[in-house]
Length: 338
Image 1 (tube, rainbow, N blue to C red):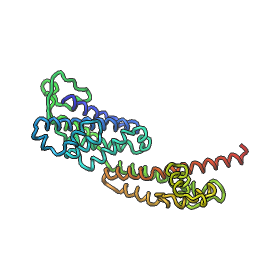
Image 2 (cartoon, one colour; image 1 turned 120 degrees about the horizontal axis):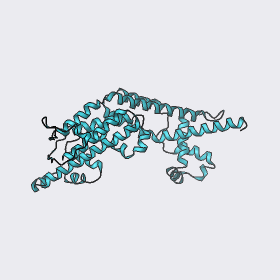
Image 3 (cartoon, one colour; image 1 turned 120 degrees about the vertical axis):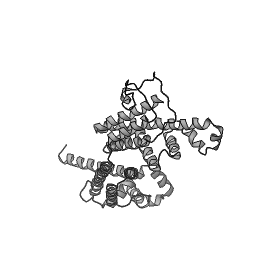
Image 4 (cartoon, rainbow, N blue to C red; image 1 turned 135 degrees about the vertical axis):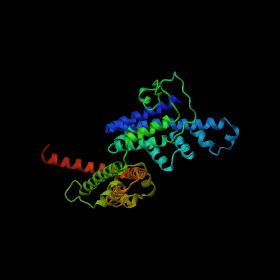
């Protein structure tokens, strides 16, 4: 057990060191180490619970969450979190946050790129949450042999004899160690919330530029309304998508469409689009609401919901704006005789 505890504390200490550097690359590593430490502890928690219940047939027979407990013995992180939540180790709020941030670890390359502006603050938030949870985790069984090796990084969290200086670990070292790491982290949720709001405002500003570029068009007289630019861009993307092709095949009558322009117009009028009006104003209101909030869990949830809900449209408008800019560049080069 001492080796396990020392290993978890070592990973949390490494996570703290990387967070302190403040850059996105170290934030990625910190998030991974924090996630590892939590997963190891949740697995141990479930294993200890199973061992305790199996030792007494009556306890096992009466236990109401056998399926969840057995599922937590496997490799699926979500099931370990679900069981810890069932047992009261993790709150409902923490459960949602942990699962979300674990998802960052599983997609570290992609998610790190997509969220890199806020990743340092989110990684610090994850470490704060995990240390708070583990500071309350009670070690069920305790044993220590003199031959057990403790990593140097973890030794500062393990009790020692005042006379000999030798390690004298006890069951509270783990809790004190997690509390100490959390105190040294000194996480403040207000800068995290502000960083999320700042990033969303940057995203919205870029989307606003893309919509206006698409609305202006590359040619004189090609300007349309912002709403029309958004509808047209979605219709054009849909024509070449599997979903759009299936919709066309099912609903379009040959007499209604004679060429690509007719098809595009028909798709603009009939294809089911989630967004048919410029959403910038409402998106800015969402960012403002996040900025005014005080709960970091809510801020994270709102941020991730926004990113997921708007991802497709943001991608479509960025691609459309890129095509307009490319055509403008071509016209400029043509007029310069290139």
